Length: 397
Image: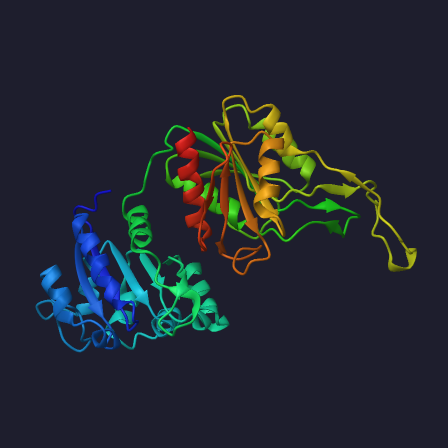
């Protein structure tokens, strides 16, 4: 994909992975981008600024006390010219600076002054990356709209093995391309997505539900809309804002979701069932709140409508994608579900894995297809997982 006429600020921080920024720079310039590099002082201990200056034919931004642009304020001018600010590698220290808005070096001042999108690719030791402080800082950045390319699992500079290696450069380049050159490969397609949990009432106060936050389904809806699709999102109760450009339908129970999905099925070319629908509901709903002293010893349950199975019967030429959240025998159980429900693809994840369960911003999934193939994805942001799922859908269309 071409990045012609795109201006990128590449921030390099003091990680052993700083040498990989040289290759990332080469890939960006090969794609047609104009790149200027800003380095922290620590980064200069790993790679000489002259290396970047030679490759970019532009001065490396180092000193927040000098006026780099004809006596205009350097960090302000640099951001005004940029289409994207990329920090790769990003150390724990730099991530903290950005999250806290410290502005105590040139790179963090550029971040505070930037009005362009920002992408951060962390790289550090595994225990550092997993530390709650780092995770909280990354969440704070994500909440502000910063794009995060999750690090990979593998051998680290410390000699240990963990999650902290800078993501593969093609993955970082792909994230940059998606931000700067949005795809419209789903233009003209109607995509029906379900998301979130359902709530099955026991009485006017209590209900049966599950831990789904809706984040994965909402990410799919947002990604599909960004790629040009007309998206219909049927959502159970969540705390998430509606994705921009999406037709929202709010439901609460499995029965309501069943009816809403079937009502909107006709125009849909693609159906992605990411909702965690309750399998059972109370057979009887009390009209009044059940008091503690009423001594309810058991609750009789009945099955809810199987939305995915019904869609499999009515599929026709549609592309049907399901999800399988499992705690054991992941691939085997997902494969059985794919075949039983007449799916084209199923996205399976082990909810017991760190970073891949409910309520988090990341996921680690396997995508199974009807031909027997299994694609294993590393830990990625849910938006990145959404795009990978849509890539597979596009391949089936």
